[in-house]
Length: 382
Image 1 (spheres, helix red, strand yellow):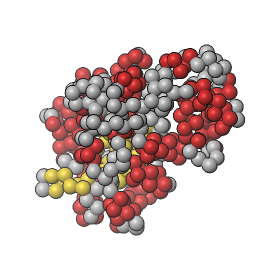
Image 2 (tube, helix red, strand yellow):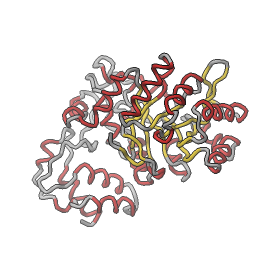
Image 3 (cartoon, helix red, strand yellow):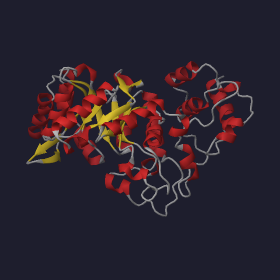
Image 4 (cartoon, one colour):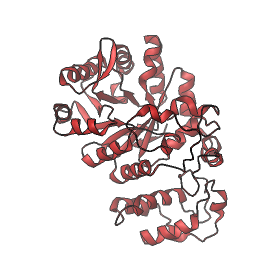
């Protein structure tokens, strides 16, 4: 298993994570064993948005005696009322629900205290403007009960405001190739429909801006809904008209700027094995770019998706990373110091490009790589 630093939290999280919402579908003993199996195979981050007692008990029992291995995303505002999930900001409901996480997980701290599920601007304003709810979040952080403050959202506009707070250190965000083509919305359900007959041309600008901003400001991202609810695995339900594999979807998410971990849902040990096989998969097995490039209505033409098809470069330029840092920097009035530093750390700069354009022949999206290398060399000074 490979690990990435989750932004400014400094936490080292597994590239493949555990989305826990399927745990309650199975017998408790079976789910406990599944979670322990994932941990033994290097998975160390789990999301617990679920308020139901069964899911929380399962996670607590699976972590027992091994709490230090796990990085837990525990949600503040996900409550269990009359046997149902209810999203709430009322402290009389929020506080007992959060304390219940600690009790059932048999722990005195949560690594990532998540401001739970804000997609609407009105709710963001209500929660963030000195509400009892946000004061409670800060109180938990000051007391060390939550080690870092995070936020879960499906809306890039809300996510960018979260980055701007300065105190939200990471974001749980929904990322897959289909969602990336859609404009911001406050209605999550709409993201799963309405793709037919519409010509989307690559990544939505606001979502691309969010990824660049998270990378620049060192706000980590973990990924939910990476498989588009499984629709991407079937050509009949995929908006691209052709199927992607789980490994291709994982690779797509992990190549977005700022992303550290993809949280997958698992029913079986075999599904865990399939997800973690990403770490030993060939480039061909992870190649999402060829599928997207051939999609009839949804074209990424001219956009670098950092897929790595441009490799190898005869002078050893890491073309995908140069393009990533160029995209990060070009949006700013001047090159951010952090981006310049990351660029310098690459070693071989864009100015080393000899203009052979062999990379352009391999690029599935028709990116004018040599021109971008020239622009990057001018921007970064080498």
